[in-house]
Image 1 (cartoon, one colour):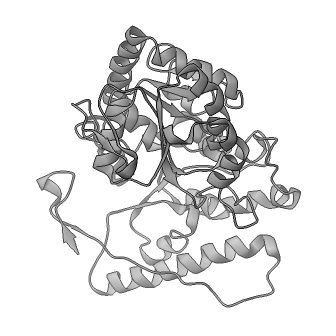
Image 2 (tube, one colour):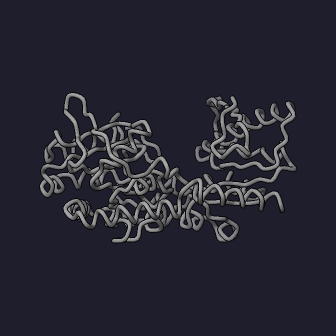
Length: 377
């Protein structure tokens, strides 16, 4: 399907070729190899799509790939002359990582013993790639030194022309009313409501936060199905688990679960926000943090990597401990009550997003240079 390129007229239309990798047949694989088996199956599916493209005359100069799920496993076999650029998002480790960060939710010891197997496709792709790229310095540093020394750090970028400050529209809550611009609104956004993004800490902060800000509304965006972590068990979601824990101690009338939102509605939510909260394990950085900053949010974030790479405490946001829900509540309330501080944080957050993470002026020119570098090798 041809579509207009977001990169300008010089590139012409973009043609998308999709693929579907269904579940394989049951096997007696050594259990830790089951994920690798799925990576190989996905890579093989992509291989046949690429061979079909090749037979139709397609011959790329550069192949840009995200190898973690296996799609790149046979890429070099199909297009041996093409330059390969691999996007390295994260290197899994059993220690000093997301897997052992939260003592409340321990990763099973068997998973820790074999977690390095998740990196096999990344290591293969890295060995065959001409150029390696990662979105943040910290993510690049998770890789072994021989790879880390080769990685170029370029963030994917966000469109700060779309995510920008502007007059906010009221937020309709259906039968529960409307949140109008100017009302105190605390926002929390994550693709999934799960411990990896600090959902449990945020929920535990609500009883204290509502005592400090009794008239504030709290808007929570995200789906129930986990994206990174495990399900809590017993057929429950983390939302239900945390509501069971803190529900009796909060004013549920002012806590609004919005599910997932269309992008325009998400940006409007950021514009309505008095204080935006972003928490994460040491893991991949969410675009939503940068989009909130670009929209001019006053952000309270966790003092974890790679958030510390983006937010300078007291300058373009405020940092607080990931696990300390009482301190989180007090920090949110302090920022919400200080109009001058919020204004300063907002201006500096916006400037950080524009200067360092704008797609059109920062990320895409850097990727263009990267592609030319690959072609010149």
